[in-house]
Image (cartoon, rainbow, N blue to C red; front, side, top):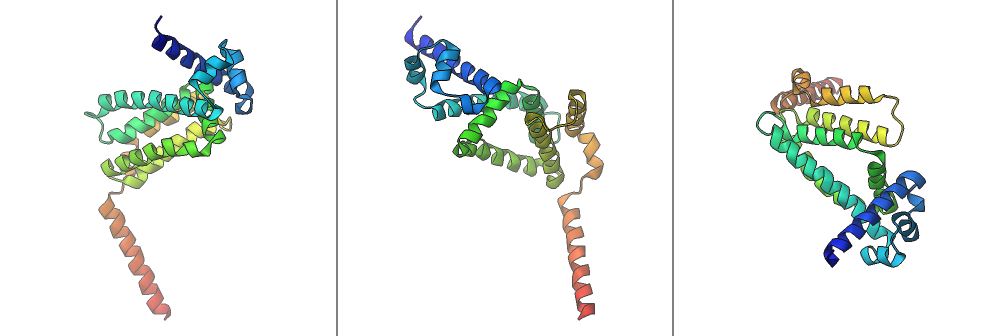
Length: 212
């Protein structure tokens, strides 16, 4: 086995061990010593890959982001020719995938952010670009964002153990969020929203003049 392959295996072993520790014991118990014990690597072997706990957390976050990025790319290729809102459909499906992933992986992702809030900038920058893409393609950007936000809420409530819903209910709700036909009657194109807003403003102005 060459050195590069050995190094990659050690890195993966350390990250898998870190994920198990977080899932079983919580992020507060994640240390380089604990990773060494869990993985069977020497502490020196762990430190050769990661000098600090923060480096481990960053690697965990990047690993999960890469996993879901690959899922999103595959899904986008599948729906880009058939969906009127391929960016929204892709993000809803990706959130559903995250919600059904093993909790250990999801907990590792959350732990990385809790332990080092500075890491939030990594997913936040990508999310901002995705939101802009969702808004740009939608006939009703606000409704599209509501669907996106609802999916994120389902994910987070499940992740933190706060959801009263069963797995079947979660799947049905995700399926409904993904179904454009369910939402098309509620869409209000930008011109219609602008006209309504303008009418409301005119009515308020008229009422103010009457009071004056």
